[in-house]
Length: 536
Image (tube, rainbow, N blue to C red; front, side, top):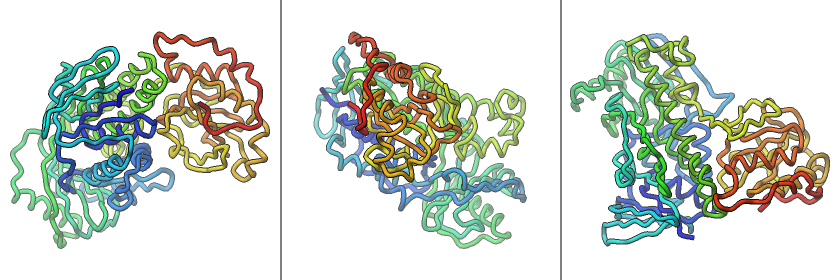
């Protein structure tokens, strides 16, 4: 079968190509540029637990050396600290320059045999038929490409979106920030800061650490105010640092500056036949601490396993449609929360009562956006195709699973999220004690043989795992997890027929035009004492 064509080699396009490769799907990654990114420390991204784990899983080697985890998060109003958050109970956000993220992903893509990275080519035509997509590019030479599907990850001015005739409505200049990257010694090494109504300057400034004593500072500006001159920016820097350092501006080394204007837009459609949109081509957001790049990575994670299923086995139209249904709904909710909070957070009042959690302070709502919590920042929860929740756990159906240690029947024990992105469903049995027992004692004992037989009868590739514990789940709970780490169903013990039905619902049924036999085998599969980790 033809490879998937990915247009655009920014963080989202690179992540999608690598995610497809993890599922065993080849791709052609078309890059309009020369394949290099200008270092811009003032343009950075914040990754939370799910997206940081995804980037690590995809082989991005720059996370460790060029990213910094927040040691804590401080919130100040005027001259008073009103809150300090530490991260003992959950992973701290990871902050790194966007060019470092892109470079790490590009290096991984360049080394992967299933990713063909092509530079200096610009898309100028796109045609579809019932078997694939044909595109033409121009650049150093004109070329035709053929793919099974195509994904436009080509940014806010997406050529793919324009060729598909998809509208991109929304709001312009929702927020505007002056930004500086500088090296200095601040009073709270490694700790990020949100400062509202400081003694001088704009009404809001944030400081986020990077490695080697570098900080990114953001000042909120009037959405349509005057241009920020170099002299005005230097004044902002000096006044802000002096306010934080006892009235005297400390020595600093200015590395990079910029002015970022944030827009809110949402494409009307994210799918047109065999063509899809992802990242900035599908949505623009970023106000109130939300992260556009991070949402683009979530697009890639969601779409990759569905395209992989279509590529390897064939997938129903309903499954491919579910990419837009899930991701567009999640991003629209994020945009709606930001629009509803904006009047209250920016001094207008009035609409705060429309936002869940509106009794909280403006600072608390903003902190949610920056730290990946609440309506402005929490990881998305997708409506499951069927409501199976025999056993309540700390994870609601459709939500991201907890990153607990798990053990496969081959004896390897790893964090659960390390096993995502490999084109398989995961079935997890909560079995206290397996973490200390030798594998030979539990692999053929208790529920395992019957569960292994049920897993072997499922209609899609599945990996069987065990865990000592899972938050909120009693012993013998069985969890069905999607390839992107979202919980599909929970069961009290082994329920072969119900497990089959839930797995079939995850893939949205058999491929169109390819009816399957009734799943009666799932209820009568003979027990096996030699379960395998992967069932094809």
